Image 1 (tube, rainbow, N blue to C red):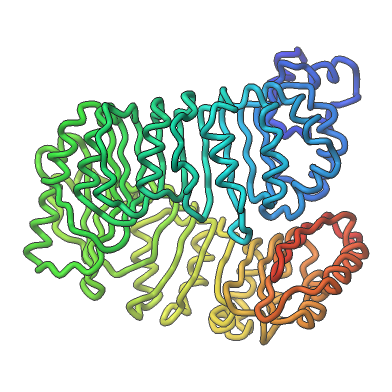
Image 2 (image 1 turned 90 degrees about the horizontal axis):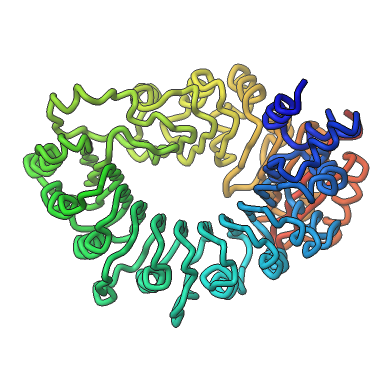
Length: 558
């Protein structure tokens, strides 16, 4: 085979498979693998423990001098992985070699790991995209300083894109006068309006903004000459027409607008939006997903509201807005069709408001939620399982469903079996343990337990501790690859963890949270000894005082 064909083959193989299959077979293959012009995406978050150890000890020394285009370090379901890497290598030495790195993702680092890595970012001289996702179980006391001094300064002069997925608001921009002139793409989970205004001022070349915004104080609305934003994705905590009007008047180059809201707020109808959007001559796409609570409108008033999104303006732009009303909870939901989400919010019994027939004919209702891979099920109306399944069959393609979260099964005890049967790729389940016991009839429902055993690979037991029928539960879920469980005490840990490891022979990650007391050092020592006997390799992350995560390699008995 020619070098060109071999390089094409390499592109389809993970780097670990590339090294295992071709390295050290001959000098020609070695030269291709080590070629500095070979582009490599090194994602350490998707590896098994064995693959991770192999990658760190064998692969990384081989490829560190080549063109590693992107790097992902993660502790998510790979507890202790980042610490293992930092203990094996001098991070400064590694980063000085990554002179061509463009994309860096840092997922769930501990605060100390984040600080150590942040101090070495200056060596990534070609870094253009940086993502940080923090762990909500940690208190990142220094992250505000890191964001201010590293991201929004000019210390990373090549950085164009920054994503911060953090469960607390940014507060570090106050007093910042000069920002990174190269930053164009910003995604931030939580931000207050005063910080957003500073962001606009300090990042004058920003063209893409995706934020969750809270506290829209009108006194903070100031005028800008013009923002260069072309894409605005906004999730807001208070639907305020004056704020929306102010913001859109600053964004005359806008091409894509997305607004998401769920809560109390004054209804903004189609005519009001039309007055705002008509001045945005570059706008091509609009996406709404807005839920207004405590709506006391009459049926006639709601229909008038729905028709306000069916004028010539909306139809000519092909911006189709559906309005649904939940009469029991006085809630109105209006949203774009087809909705581009990859998940569905709680299932309600919505009453669809009037929709012009000419508009309806232009939309395939089965494309309403074409990208759904995750489903959250609540039951606020004592709805029966058959009605919910009939409702869902009109909304999503079941074969795309991979993750299911069930928060209330009152009246929905029969929903899990048909979902598992109709969604063959569903392999992840989040559920309260008492509900699981009820649904499975204390794990005596043979057909359902067989489906759970064959399909579910990732299980999260929410809030309540594992209690009755423990042994039956562990047998039903013997094929799990990851398991999140709550226990009461250290004594429970000492009894149940060995059972978990004994029953679940394919388990790779185990997250344990204690409900009533802090984890004792003695338990951690016992778990280490147990894992040394059971697995070929392991690591753990202690998230004091109540949580520990274990990441395991192949079992010695396998």
